[in-house]
Amino acid sequence: MKEHPNYVFIPASTAEGVRAYREPAIAHPLQLAFLNPAGERAYVEHVRALLSAGRLDEADALLMRDLDGFDGRMAQLCHATTRQSVTVEGWDDLLPILDEYEGPSITAITVGLTNDSDLVFDHAAEHEPALVVALYSDDSYAFSRNAAETILGECLSDYPAFAGADEDIEFYAVSAGLAPLNTALIQSKHRYFLRDGRDGVDDRAPGGYVEYILGTWLRALRFLQALRSAAGSSGIPAGARLIAGTTDLNTDLACVLGEGAGVEPAAAVAAPIAAAALTMKKWVPKIDPLAEAFEPGSALRRKIAEPLHAAEPTLIPEPVAVTAIEPVPRVEQTSLPFTPPERKRGLFARLFARLRRAT
Image (cartoon, rainbow, N blue to C red; front, side, top):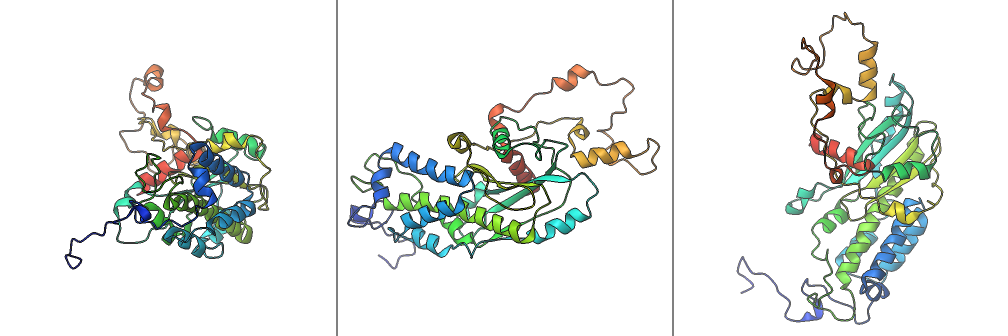
């Protein structure tokens, strides 16, 4: 009975599919394209290449045109999530903070968009995706001298040269306006297309699945647009690179949004498919008893500058200080176990490891 507290509606007809989505009488062109895995892959890689190259207006026109043919809940949320409704809050604090910073010039700012994987179990509230920000100088990598393509190539490496070498600067920013769409994507029942007939539709990809794919890429697009707008209005350090990306959102990508004082689109990547292959899996740092060797560059510089007889107490816990009568053999330090390569891939892996430790 419908009045029973445990009543659950189950469609009696396959017209709505197993996920209660009402299919249109005429299939959308993308439903026909996504029926073949190669067709879906070609479309996704095209959108990824546009975003990776900073061609946000082209990606916007493409996604909104394709969403016009759908009227499901996800498509409605996508239309409601406009460029003007999504912002990055807190960016106007960046330059004042850097004015008081006594370390080296900041030449790169990385901003990553992600979600806590546990949010899929939380249906009580809407969730904004998290932003993770890190600032770098040329002490860790020659950001100011390398081309955008070279920097993105470093992002593709198993262990980027600048991973873990961000400057010790307290700066935070948050996204605003993505919560309704982001929450719907987290809780979507249309995340997978099995292509085995169990989706309740024939000769087409389920409309709910296509809407989900379009929604994931619109979320990434709106984030990049909001970040570019914030950087354009509040500024970034002169000559610094603004590097943005997403991870664990089914849209893994990285792009250079800003070079120098302005915020201009980066030139099209020579090999967009390579940039699109960015994995950016979470990286877990190895346990090292000599932890001070891996502190941020600014902290190390301060320690070197301190006199050996400084009166201030050391910031390193007593067990960590290397005060043993017999020095630690070099072979023991270099033979510590390494994190498996699959756990430390990509630029934003380091950044999101910071987020997990902070929470």
